[in-house]
Length: 500
Figure 1 (cartoon, rainbow, N blue to C red):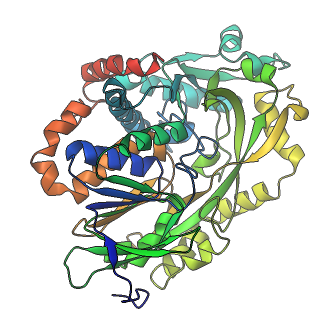
Figure 2: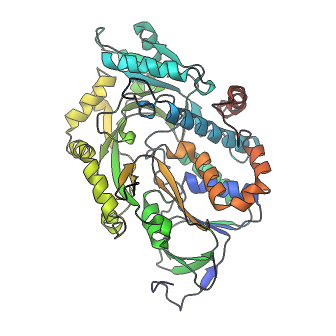
């Protein structure tokens, strides 16, 4: 046991499961575990004084309702000109799986469906050379039931109906084409997370501790498969120790430093590259009401996925909002309310080489982020005007978005690579697991946590949990993009979510 643990302090609690961080991932995992086994004792520790105060909060989340419908970065164009749709299909399927669980929760009256609203998803391109790409993307996707109902148009009158605000003051000679999915959704993940925790905390054996920060995680040498956590009450300074047989680190950007404290071999070589963001938020209600869609464009060369420009209708805490961005930036913080020393503190002997290698391989990204950080207000406004030509700068204000930490890991050459996505890192015995990475994150939280259950609760999943999961998620173990009829049936059932 590390010297950090003072032997004068004794364990105060021994829950079956500890969840670090009160975001959508911990909420989803806690719910699944409690539904699988009602006797499980769960403790959740969150350093903030609120639930979903970081990445799961609607104002911090870079894109709600990710379904692959409109995000062009999920369908890259290959060198031969064809469009790779594998990632879009996977994400669309994962979002449907999330909707299945949410529908189950609504049907059981555990939560209400006021966290999700119907909002069309649109992909728009503004250059002639991009229209052919958009057409190819449309032709490839429309053959799948997951994208059934997608429409492509270059007709100005049709596009004006889809995006009236974007055509006010636009030159008729401007080139624009778009695809539209009417079945898109907007999800307030902050509201959903709070609703799930409200339900969970009413269940016997579940405790949520706010204002409590996990300072260290260490193996208990005397007991195989047991972990001890040192926890500090950030208000009172009181320290407590708890033992558990399973720890999930779902603390957003703080997951990497906590994972490093476990000293598991599987964490070796992992590093983090923080990316911050900002939004232009519309203050004019009349302008907000003129737009009713999530319109995604193409990202600039070298831009990270979270920086795909989009004009985004959101319903946040029941109020309609209109956001544009996000504008990427660089910060050494791993959390919006983190420390400026987070990045430096995450550098260890085993990840120095991967981090240096990833940095050298991504010099264009570094240049892009520097350009974004130093970008003037006028330059930011020019990018908005591509979407809304007659936008008035007085109708918009700059607001901080969330903080993301992209994954750096060893590659086959044992150097390093920067990855955009999410990854579960877990010990060989499954006793500790962490979720690293960012987009698409929250929208695919159910699939990610099902993957975690399969890796960390293998025996249970192979015995008596599968039947219950099939009740909660009817498509569990099946493929929605291979079984078109099942996809249509599932989507028909999940429409209950939009009847609020």
